[in-house]
Length: 189
Image (cartoon, rainbow, N blue to C red; front, side, top):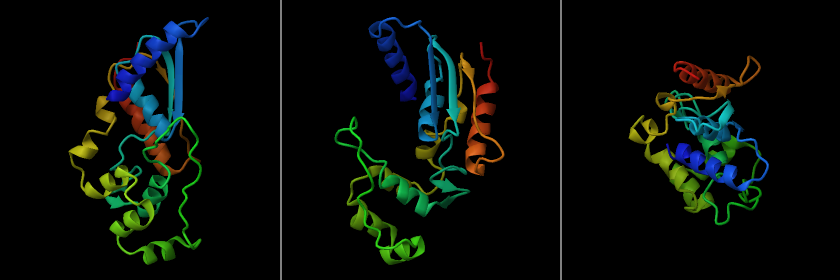
């Protein structure tokens, strides 16, 4: 996972360049940032003392965001990838989608758009390769397997708090439970 080595490099830089730090690091994130949090504690940097991956993306294909039980989540994916895409300057707030849906009725919008390729051509205009990845990998292939955190949750050496409860939507509860089971199946020092 690249996020793991990125976290190691980031912590090393922060500890050397931020004055008056105590040498301890805590990280947290919800949903996609929860994925980054969970991925960051694999082969944990020794300075990470606590992490809270809250409702993290764990397995996008099975019951998470992209496919749910193998069914493509059209409205959720399209809505997400209209804003979550490569940015020219990721340090600046990008704002809304910029897409004029023309209706508040999602069924009418998608029916009028036609096929999936039309959504990219008419609205995304080829701006988001991540959207196309979702369409190009409609089965649980190596693309999805490489992005599944559960089998990689090893060498976690910090305290981990996962968040999800009975009032949380089922997908988010499943994410937290899956992360917690993966992280606690190993010895945490």
